[in-house]
Amino acid sequence: MLEKRYDLAEEYSRRALKYNAYNINAYQALSIALRKAGDTKQASDINNRILELEPLNHLSRYESYQLTQKKQELERFQSFIRNELPHENYLEMSLYYYNLGLNPEAVQLLEHAPEYPSIYYWLAYILKDDAPQKSRSWLQKANSLSPTMVFPFREESIPVFKWAVSKTPENWKAKYYLALLYWSKGRIRETGKLINDCEEPDFATFYIIRAYFNKENNPEKALADLQKAVTVNSSDWHNWYRLIEFLNNRKLVDKALYTAK
Image 1 (tube, rainbow, N blue to C red):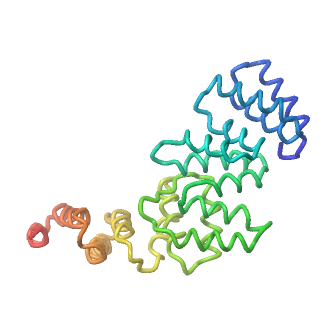
Image 2: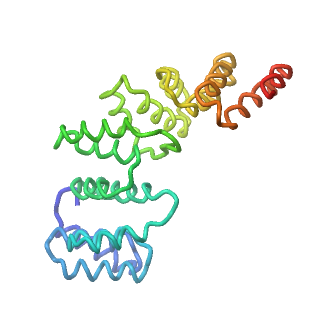
Image 3: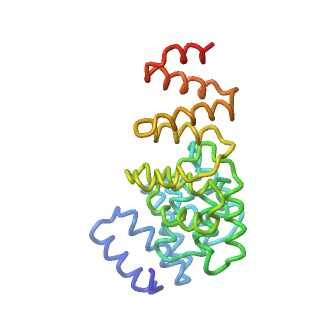
């Protein structure tokens, strides 16, 4: 598929299906190969077969939209994504296309996705060579969105956020997201360098997270960050709770009691 040899992609997909007639990955590759080769009838039949085997297969519904480019097919595809993190479905499918070298499909799919920072960082990254002006626009959009409830976890996103940091070193958000991603992979040294290099954002959760990262090796800095979180957002009881909890754990009972009052 990466070499755009769709005839060979079709052949090997069919071979895989002879070995295992329930191989969803082979069916998906076959559907795409047939569409790229212009055989829309067979591609549509394969999409229907996938849905018989796996009724909640979102990629097959999106491939049906790719075949027709009809609005109702797009709406049908979108209507089946009903979980609490719909952006992750879009990103997962987009990465499937991206890894096959199908950048136009990856971009188009992300453009239909719900608003979310990781979506826009990926759009900026994929378009950086072919459409630099659009890439800059998506990067600016990604940096402008709220970081609330944004916790990147995909290892494939590491080069994306590294690139974003290199392009906008003055913006703290890409550094913060990359630090979270490194931390989730146990890359502690890189996490510390990034999260301690951020500016002073107006975002309480950032200080809570940095405090938890530094609480063992630098408790003074952790305490300062917890106090900063309360200053940034004093109306959220969670920030007060975490500060009081930290003081209690450090046996600073009088300070904890005073803070609680």
